[in-house]
Amino acid sequence: MASLRLLIVDDEPLARQRLRDLVGDIGGYEVAGEAANGVEALSLVQQQAVDIVLVDIRMPVMDGIELAQHLRGLATPPKLIFTTAYDHYAVQAFELNAIDYLLKPIRSERLATALAKAQPLQAAQSQALQPLQQTRDHLSIHERGKVLLVPIAEVLYLRAELKYVTVRTREKSYLLEDSLTQLEQAYPDLFVRIHRNALVARAAISGFEKQRMAEGEEAGEAAWVVLLKGIPETLVVSRRHQHLIKAT
Image (cartoon, rainbow, N blue to C red; front, side):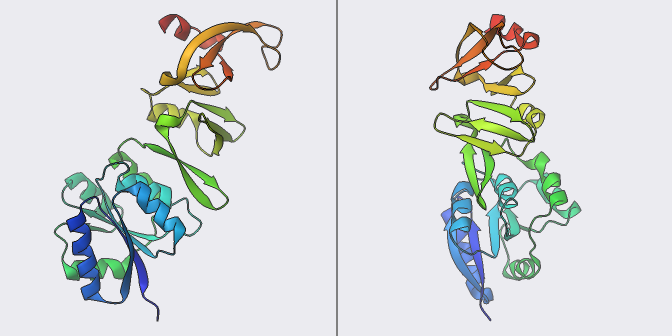
């Protein structure tokens, strides 16, 4: 029987080495790789088969909670076990929602038990972890069975279109299955609403200009638009949100 393949995710090299040693002592498992943060881990999971991910909660670049949310978007998500050195509230949340975790320093017997019963993160469990999650630094874009990470800092605007949200960066546009209202609530300091269907990154606004509209609801009328840094595209500011122009 083939060994189950593990990915160890922790920003501390010594912690990764300890887990690697423990896994070796238990037997029946193969360490397929290591990652120092969630971004590295997601890339590795999409490059090779991984059965179980051992992931630290607090890490730079992308923490374990955010990584878990992104992994759920994969066609075949791996099983998850969280590790933590502290955070009483995180431990309590895991226990209440039957999410397995390992408290550092990790003991061999406890690790063996956790590995034997590891499961993929379920939707209800994912929702339960959201209060523990620091602000997401990346958006998950699903394309051709893959999960692409788009850094929030690179997003110029978010625009609702039918059941999708268009995510625009300087280089490309993506489609995201998410709620514009939820995104507005998640990033109140980064984005400002200029229309019922559009949020613009505050840092991406280069100015405002009045233009005569050629199409849409405002066709033939003069309307204020947002000028964006780095792209020639403009976005209409609705009458309801024109107070933004005076405040900027």
